[in-house]
Amino acid sequence: MTLAARLHHFNDVAERAARLLVAPLLLVTRVYVAWQFLKSGWLKIADWETTQFLFEEEYKVPLVSPMLAAVGGTFGELVFPALLILGLLTRFAAAGLFAVNIIAVVSYAHVLLGEGFEAALGQHYLWGLMLLVVLVFGPGRLSVDAWLKASGGGARTQCALSHGAARTRELS
Image 1 (tube, rainbow, N blue to C red):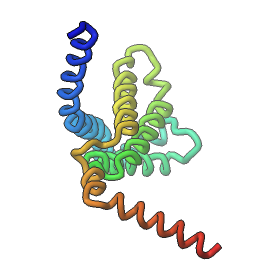
Image 2 (cartoon, rainbow, N blue to C red):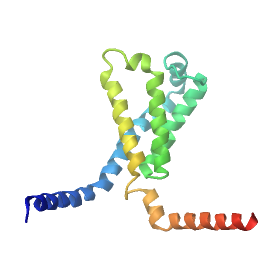
Image 3 (cartoon, rainbow, N blue to C red):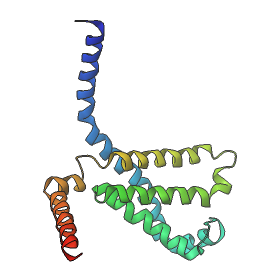
């Protein structure tokens, strides 16, 4: 066996072993990043008066009123993480939380970009990267999305779309 063939064999063995870790890794990624935002959403709901104050005085959310920002941010920090943990509409949930994360950094940039807050900003970068991983690679096998796809939900949707396209051609 040549050196190239041996290296290729070792790479194949490593790849097969790594494939076993994909689903658990994606699950842990989803749960970890979701938990970070869920805690923040719970804190906002638990003390709505303080939340309103912070959105009026401290956070600088562009383009929307402080009240709309508070409601939207809290909604995003509660609903998207729940979907992400379940692995339901996972890519949409990851995209939504990615947007919440960006808005949080932009709104609090006057603090996060200051000296001494590098670690806090680094957390937002980490969460953003984790959300991009889920967005690109999907939820993995340990998710409601995968279960729905395996149970034929994807096939029925495709069939319905095909039927609708055929029906549209009939009508035109």
